[in-house]
Image 1 (cartoon, helix red, strand yellow):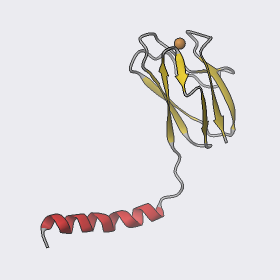
Image 2 (cartoon, helix red, strand yellow; image 1 turned 135 degrees about the horizontal axis):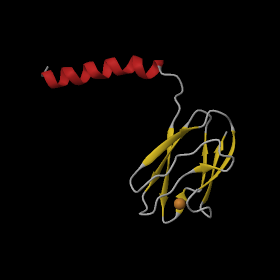
Image 3 (cartoon, helix red, strand yellow; image 1 turned 90 degrees about the horizontal axis):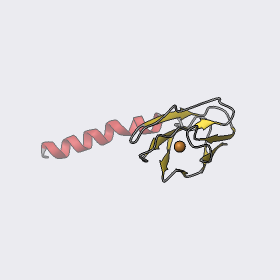
Length: 108
Ligand SMILES: [Cu+2]
């Protein structure tokens, strides 16, 4: 048996118990801010998931909860911020720089 093959088998054996022991994990989903829009504008996630907002526009943007309960702060091009949504609900948000930019995170 070559050492490469033995290493592959060993890594497979050590991963198996890890995978089976992991509880259901929260996910991180992406909203891309591009073309003066949140993409996707409506995103459905599970409680405990996080959303990473990334600005790909030249203009600065924010993702700011309509009720001000969370805010990414101002993101310049290429910058990102993550928000974790612990409780189910419908979270409408907008860009504080361009209030016509709107989005919704639906947490089930
Ligand atoms: Cu904006």
